Image 1 (cartoon, rainbow, N blue to C red):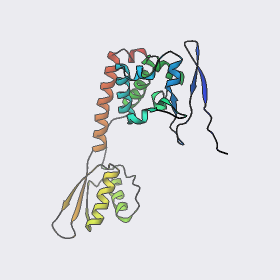
Image 2: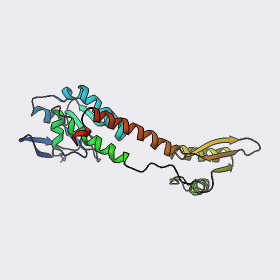
Image 3: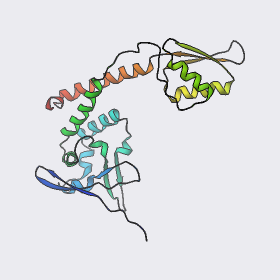
Image 4: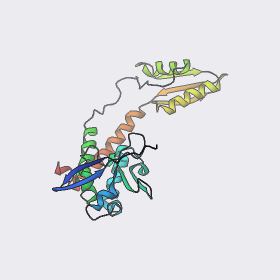
Length: 233
């Protein structure tokens, strides 16, 4: 006998109105989606009315940047079957309570912007000082001999450069490891003698990315402040 997955419902109150929200899982993972179509019906609306609005487009753009998320994973529309309708990912409400899904569909976007402002403000409050020495993040997944040497180089607070003289395939492997883990290292190949050498020099790429992110966060807070969102906190 085939097993059927039962819908999971929560009853939430919005402006003293009881709203039933289907919180079934669309897939066998941690991606929880809310059936926005069913919620919107209780307000005599359709999800597209919110999705196509200027407010929604601005909000979605902020979430995509702040959460590093893809649009197709944020809002999903299913044409038929058990999961027919428009579904909103839980990131549209986290850490806001479930009831605010209903407020979102009802074009009351302020609680969601407040959640974004809270997230950004916490990140802005984090320490932003440049590295005090030459030690860099050395968390690498590969434990081969060459990557172990790379790890020791990254973890050394006094060593700013490393010459790795090895065959091309080994140099390429180290290069791929550096790229994959976004290591704070500039690379160039020295061809004075064979085998060639990979010259690795530490930089401040991670810190510079954080500085750039800080400016984006400040710009976001400025925009939300102009819109009166931050002042609502």
